[in-house]
Length: 529
Image (tube, rainbow, N blue to C red):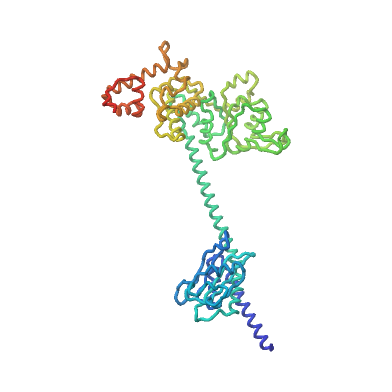
């Protein structure tokens, strides 16, 4: 080769490198994948004088599973007749190298494939797009019959551009995938935040004063006191027998206070050993006692910024009482086994069913802690002292059971409701709730709770009830007598019209018929049908 030929060859190579670098530089400045592929296909078609070009990306699930993402039309006709045949794409995927077919009709490798299946095309170029050792896609070019075969040198240069662009395209695809996942994560986070707000609002509404069941004078006094203590951080002592709803009042105080967005932590101080209770309330360090294999923060730390409700405070050991007093006075807690204290900001609500004054006399409760806890006192009356709330509570529990049991028309007869009203309820609201749920499960027709669905405790004579002394028979006997009289009177007023009578009595048509049969009430059969 002469010196002049060497110079020409070097110049040609230099121009080739400049051309390739220019295209790669242009592609590397783009992030959007469709734009990148558009540049690749345009440059490859320009270099090779192809009629059409197409890029197919390989789906990750399978090399055979491909989808077309960009296609360049014939610049003269604007048509898109060309599709890469599976025999061609399969060959490139298996061999991982460029495939050039000069004539589809004569190429022995694809004897079963003719140019007629690909429209009017004769010559095909197909480049694998390899990045990180894997094929991420194929770039395919075609030329019409009559325009000659693809130039080998130009095909080689086009192959270099496709090859060097593959990693850029893969990075862009990964970036878009990451951006999409991040977008979905943001959407999920927003949905989670919205759900948290919804649940918080629902919780706030649940403990709004108007949703606390009670219209009797004693309960109105309780709610008035609750509204007064919500606006400050002073300790509140809630007094009441078991089952009166002390925890409900504590929740109402917290969720109507300035701390409602912070935690409410609830702890029963009864039935715990001294060390275990202090560990739960104040935490412990590793090795503080047998089984303490790691350090653990306590409930006061968990409630920092919010409220802690100490139920059955009268059962707390004296040493624990001293630690609780230190929190109220100084805001300091010390984990079991620790040598240093730390500060917390916690409002303390407490409750008991005991007389703490009596416990002080016995020496089982600290007088100084009592005075600290007793800044405000709320005394919840037993249910027997607020009977006017019983019908409201009964309806409230029925409404909840309608949802829980899926029985929309669940209701109660006047006789059963009167029996509930007259009972003394030593177990208070909790006992009433349990009684309603039990009766709803066992009631005969599944929709109407009647007096015989109530437990024997309710229907037997009750020394604490409103029944007058000397009344003959059991409560059940008297209620059944009253119920029979009411049914007979109503039937007489309506002319034995079952539909009207059932509406007046608050019964279903079937329920009224069952009672008529049970009590042997005489009616006109024609009117009953």
